[in-house]
Length: 314
Ligand SMILES: [Mn+2]
Image (tube, rainbow, N blue to C red):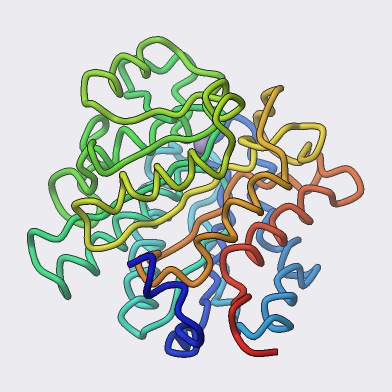
């Protein structure tokens, strides 16, 4: 796979168009301001660089909650996730590359259930999905362990089949991810109950100190091999709070001592054009906390690093 990836001209064989799906929901978070993230990023034309580097993209409709205020967040999150799953599966079926822009991280339940459903219907019922989860947190609470009960702290547990049935059953009954097909990168803020769940399941977690020690390049390459070993393809879910708040303050739940933009974009460049990368998700952008739009620039750079085609002829 690696050799083919670096053959000259290989990327010319991958005319994938990026289909952007905005998810304007903050119902999974304590603070809902990230619901305005997709609209701000679309208005700023932050992804226009993708066209300048040989890619192509189009914004799909932004998915909004259909409920008025006062509705239980679980119902809103479930409805939004179902629609995200449908949109993502539809784009994959059309041959496009889905880029999901949150909104809070609960949209991941929809994104990766949609990719999973697509693999099931095209590759087969045994097809497995790998996932690299880049986040300061573990997002692996269940309703029993969560102190806040905020649903954006639970999506990874849901995708692993643990938690609220109304969420774990989106896109079909049963887990969407096998624990051995998942890696977390950049974790530094978590509760022991979530760590215990991931350890019991056998999920590989690259805590921030390991990233510091080994470097992002080595960690990401190892993670890619880990999530690709037994799967039909893999995705990347990026919570912007994985980045250091000094570079990316525009997030809902900042955590000190994070990843730097330079190390992440350099490492992601090695994955650019990987045909096994099935979808990308970037969440928790809070435009109201984004000083000088530095966090929006991080979104742009991450997308360019992964989705531009640096090997294509100029
Ligand atoms: Mn998260």
